[in-house]
Image (cartoon, rainbow, N blue to C red; front, side, top):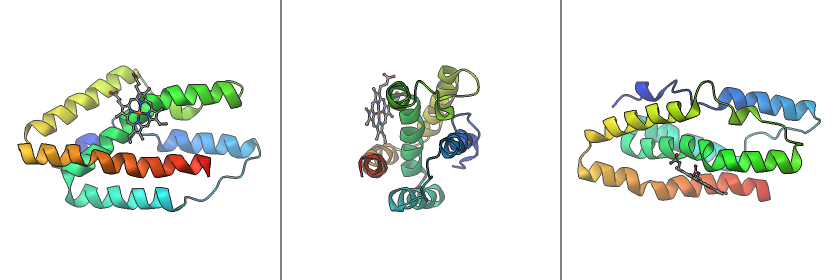
Length: 143
Ligand code: HEM
């Protein structure tokens, strides 16, 4: 599998995150350097992207779909409660989010059609790690 079809899906968040960080900086907050939970996770998925497509896809799915589902709800609450309703760029997508998600869902299902039962199981079993790594990043907020 080449990951080409999973690039430029419209779900990417890096540019909007950069804009939000710039906004926070303007507000006088200091922006911390990436620390070990994020660095570890990105190194791990980068490694998977080269050698374990099924496991990689699990992280791909969980990351983008979490941000657009529960993440959006959390983002809205946080904005209401502590940002005076400021809508962060992170929660704005170019185009119709529902449609972007459906396009990616279709691609994921298509790729997985060619997987064996074992490969599908391998993808699903990676979910635990996906929550573990993301949970560590989430916990930074509480630290
Ligand atoms: C504070 C922690 C979290 C909360 C409160 C939360 C909340 C939610 C909620 C409310 C939904 C349903 C949204 C809807 O019905 O549209 C959802 C969906 C989802 N969440 Fe979470 N979540 C959390 C953490 C995570 C983490 C750590 C992951 C993965 C690493 C994750 C992955 C997903 C996925 C894949 C969906 C389904 C998206 C879809 O079907 O489109 N969530 N979450």
